[in-house]
Image (cartoon, rainbow, N blue to C red; front, side, top):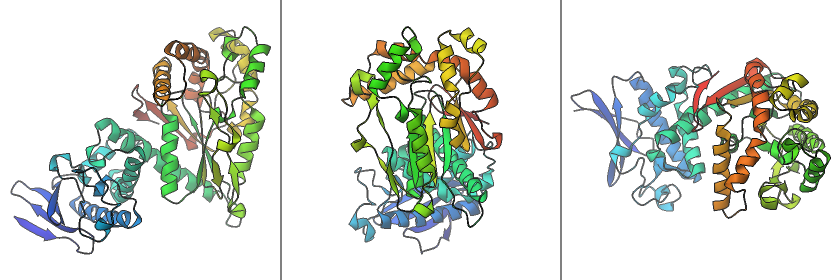
Length: 444
C-alpha cells in the first residue's frame, strides 16, 4: 500500500492511502480512533483538488472548534454530543473529524459530485471547476445549515442534501453575486443602500424557510440582513373587519390575503427606512413589523410592537418575500374571466408596485406547476402550528381559506412566469421550479 503524508499543520494527523484497486482513502488520526474518507482516483474531481479540499476541511474544522461553531463534521455521533463545544476538544484530547461508522461518511468527493448534479448549477453559470475551487465554502455553508436545522451532517437524507446543496446554498451564491453587482453600480464615495431581493412564491412552498436559511448564512458570514414578508403588512384585525364590511359578499376580501388587505403606508415606511440603513447610519436600529397569524383563531392580527424584531445597520441585504409579490394587474376582462370577484382585487393591485416592487432590484421566483398543491402545504403549516401549541385553523377552515387565493393564482401566475415580476430586470431574475416536495427540479 502506497502512503502519502499530508500537511501536519492541520489539527488532524492525515494520511492518504490507496489499495490495489486504485481506491484511496484518507485516515484522520484523532487518538485513539481513526476514521476513513473514501476517495476514488478515477473521479472527475481531480485528486489534487481533493487533497486540497480535505486539507481545507481540516482548517475549517480548526476554525469551527476555536469559535465554538462546529457542526457534525466534528461531532461524536456515538454519543450525540457536540465535541466542538467541548473544552476537551479544544485542548486536543478528543477530536472526531468524521463519525464512528464509515458507512455513514459523506465524502468530499461524493458531495462534490452531488453538488454538480444540482438543477441550479448550470443556470448559475457554475462549472465543476468553480464548485471545486469553492468547495471550502460549500462545506462551511453546509455545516452552518446543519447546525441551523439541527440535523447530523453525516447522516443527511437525500431530500435533506437536495434542500441544502441543490437549493439553499446555490441560491445563497446567487444572492452574493447579486450583492456584488449591486455594489459595483455605485461610485466609491457613494453610500450603498442594502440590496432588496424579492422572493415571489405560493403559500406553503418553503419560501419563508429559504429566506430563514439565507438570512442565517448572511449572519454567520458577517453581513447584516433583514427578513421581511408581505404578511407583516396585513391590516390589523380591525382593518380586516372594515374591509370585509365594505366589500360584503366578496369572498376574496372576507379574510386577509388578497390585494387590498395590506397596509401599504406601513410597508412604504418600513422599506424606505430599511433602504436608508447604510454605513452612514452605522449602529442605527429599527423594529420591523410582524404579524400574528394565530390570533383570533387563525384570522390573524398585527403582533404587539413590543415583540417586533430589531435590526441594526448598516444592512447589506433585505430579504423580502410574499405569495403575491411581483404580481401585475391585468385587464378587467382577463381577471373577471377567472372570477368576477377579482375585479376589486385587481383594482387594488395597481397601487402595489409603488408600495413594494419598486424597491426590489433582484428577484427569485419559485415556480409551481399546479396551484392546487397549496392546500396540502398550507394544511401542513397549520398542523405544525397546532402541534406547537398555537391556535390554528381546522382542516375545513384551511380548505376554505386557500380557496380564496386560488383565483389570484390562476389569474396572475401565468404572467408572472412568462414575463417576470413587475418592474424586474431579466438579468437579475432567478426562476426556480420546485416539485410537490418543495425541492428544485429546474432553474432558469
